[in-house]
Amino acid sequence: MLVITASDGVAHGVRVDGSGARLEERLAGLGFTVERMVVRDDREAIEAAIVDGAARHPLIVTTGGTGLTPRDVTPQATRAVLDYEVPGLAEAMRAAGRAVTPLADLSRGVVGVRGRSLVVNLPGSPKGAMESFDAVAPVLDHALETLAGPYDHGIIPQGG
Image 1 (cartoon, rainbow, N blue to C red):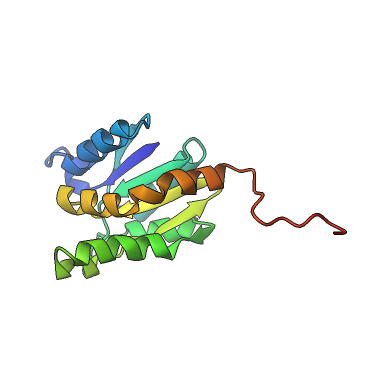
Image 2 (cartoon, rainbow, N blue to C red; image 1 turned 120 degrees about the horizontal axis):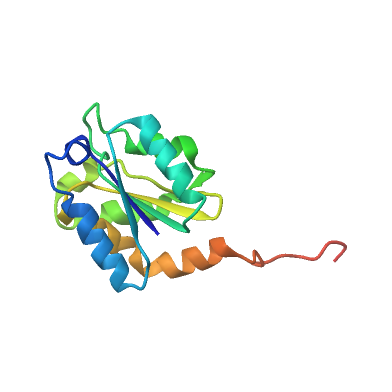
C-alpha cells in the first residue's frame, strides 16, 4: 500500500510529514506493508504518483492538497486518473469530520478506483487525516477484496 504526501513544504524539507508518518503507523498496525512518497502540490506530479502506485499497490492513500487554496490540486489530479469514483466513502469521511468540526465540509477529498486499486484522498493535517481514515477503515478489507476479484457478485451465466 502506498501513502502519497502532497505538500510543497514537505517536498522542500521545510515541514515534517506528520500525516504520512501517522498513516504509515496506522496502516502497518492493520497489517499493510507501507511505501511512502512525497510529491509537490503539482497536479502532474500527483497524477503520475497515483498512476504509478496503482500499477503496484491495491490501496493508495494521499494526504494533503484537499483544501481550497490554488495549490490544493489533489482532488483534481485524482479525478483525472480514476476509472470511477466511490462517493459514499468520501461522504463518510466528511460526515465523520463534521461531527468534530464544521470545517470538515471544506475538504474536497475524493475516493475512487483506478484498475484494481482504491485511491483515497485525506486531508493534510495529521488529525484530519486520521479522522478521515478511521471513517473508511471499517470497509477497506471488503473494498480491497472486491477489487481484487474474482468479480462474481450476481453474475448470470450467458444463455441462462
